[in-house]
Length: 207
Length: 207
Picture 1 (cartoon, each protein chain N blue to C red):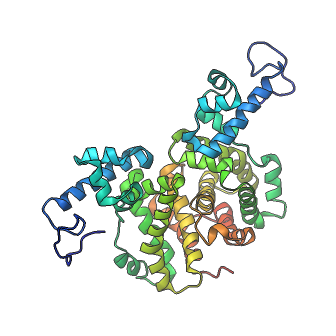
Picture 2 (cartoon, chains in turn cyan, red):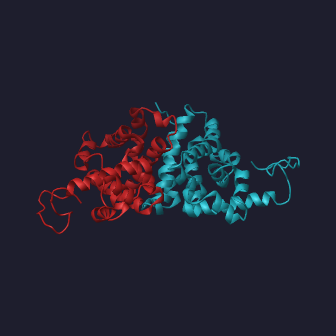
Picture 3 (spheres, each protein chain N blue to C red):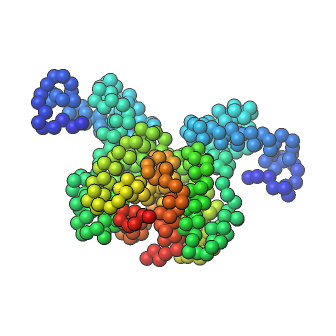
């Protein structure tokens, strides 16, 4: 939904226009949304409270983002660029892709902690079907489909679900339930334990 | 909290008494709680709405169960008796304990579907620290500590967290996010895929 540099100025809508203030208003709404989703959770933050914090009318939030699930989707900043991440995961060959993927995910979460927007999305997905659908699309399109296309293994959809099941479970135990000793375990140990699981789900024969 | 058959009658409190109506009132509250937690989720059901459905005053719900997390903990019916389950998991030796555990869990969930009380507890645990603590205690004391004591492996707390991370992730993908194809995968296939993961987490060398 970002305005590309090639967009030509028009007065039709703020989304396609380049009028002064449009992109800063949009950013102000996203900033307020990120803060409120992290602090209050998906259910606690409202379009109205986000608009108030951004200093705009709620109708403008609707105009820019449509509805709350879409606003959440835009507010979640994917923490790495898939176009760079996928080649990096495969940089030392297929045999380390499981470890590399766990390392990428664990380090990203550990840096930002329990308020990471992806964790907000995960919490919301537990009760909101629209958020669950967003998370699915997000993980599948941004990460697993490009990765599995490179790996060329059979049944990419099932392998995606298997890897998501372990990574989501790890996120839940480490950052939501915060079960010890796993919550405090060094990232290197987490990678050593979970790397082989993800490796098997992505590459081994499943039948 | 159940009144054991050996309890001697007293008029001190309904919890220790055997007066007619006490246990049926308690059961009526639990029945209403199970229905409402399943239908409305943890946040949607209130002590008041549960009391209303059970036809009692809200103060009686507090008297019997204390607070909402405790009521949830009592309402979650552990779907098997650990005293029987643990020996059954080990019936064909240590080499099949991973598969047996996954089979037990998957079959239990598949029977009751998305409204299973354990899934209600899991959803609640995502946002309510008290529910997260209950879930942890529940899984650890009822299942993993007795099982790992039998297995005799090192680091039982870490192994418990690892197994929970995969089983919770499987529950989330299959019954909450309902990602296909995993959500619709035959239980036998699920056991074949996840059995080796749990086996490794419970028994293999982690260092």
